[in-house]
Length: 314
Image (cartoon, rainbow, N blue to C red; front, top):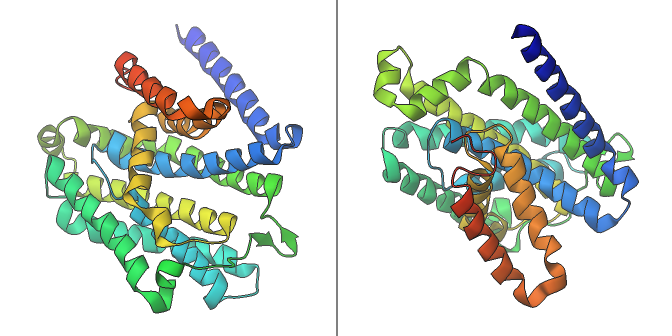
């Protein structure tokens, strides 16, 4: 049995390595600019949904304010590169630790009072926090430029090498996605992952078994928020213009749908869910008049057939 398991594990690794190589080389084979743009957007959403999967899927925290942290990371990156270190490629890279630290701190600020709430009350608290973040982006005009947003955000660079367009940005996003997924794989299959799953299944039993429930939830929320900030940092420098409307409740709902459709609590679920909701609407463009109808029916059918998501285990 041991040999068979090792053989299966080896086969899975070969398949995953093959898919990884195909994904890495895709923009150099498919040179269509719009396809590469979609892949860049998909990469950003994979980071967002994989982060949200930690709090929603693993720790069982229904989180409706994810876009607030996404926006915080975007503004942190944009302000760092346009005002703190303007005109230098270092501004882009310096924005990453700033975004992650602010995102995780904001997650701690949200979690400190709200993690003691149960069920829907926690969801409502996160919903309110997300709207507070958007309101701050809208009203702190001297810092965020209010409803006008921040323009002319410089594209990512490494020295004099521009990473801000097409396949070059894809390489950057792909590297970040790979690092994020490797990190999450280790977390999910390590001690943290077991604690989160124990808390999700039964908090009381987990506490009796010695798990610090509050700390486990807090770490889930902070890591989830930090990853949302990373996605925001990439997004701001990719589109070069951000404003508060980019980070509304609709965005939080979209990312939540990606997690649920893909299979919450699973490792590949957020990746599959992101691909479905980013790429499927584009495939329906030839039938523009019926696109929303077909899209809605497909989602309803998918949830009826696979209520636990595409890669759900139940």
